[in-house]
Length: 214
Image 1 (cartoon, rainbow, N blue to C red):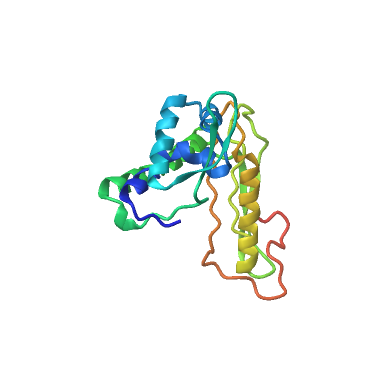
Image 2 (image 1 turned 90 degrees about the vertical axis):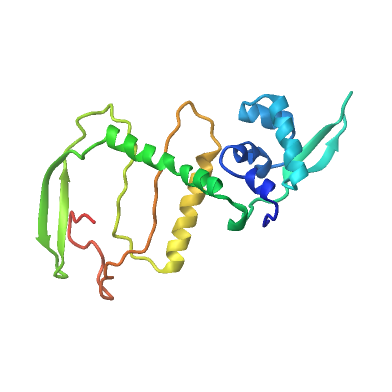
């Protein structure tokens, strides 16, 4: 859904938009959404009224019950497009600030695992005539480190269709865990981008040398 109202666009900026998440996922009531978000019922009721007036939220049905009937809401779309013309300088600054968590993830990764436990680096010529650098990693000496995984791999040789399929599988795996509510917050940085490095000639298998590292 493409927005045309600046006020509706402002409601989808970082901060206010977080409260809309339960209604984007499924049909729900204000009370259920408030419990999920951990916010006061009255505060969320005020937001829901604003979203309905802005055309972002709609009532899908009314459930009868003793006393006052309960309204069930959902977002009018699963995704929204905000034209740049609706965003002012301050709005753009807020969106840019939303990426500050990336620096937090990088800082935490450096703090928990600043350097690999490296014993040696081997440099050798492969059968294809390429230089390879292999890293001999010693067993981890500090089991208290909290960095769960650091994956850096430049050895994927894919067609664009395979790359898109791989990205889709990664997103599906991410979504499996995204809705969990654990006691600890974890950050993830993952980039899958085409590189300018040459592809091996046809018939040759990448990484053929034993112990080769990307």
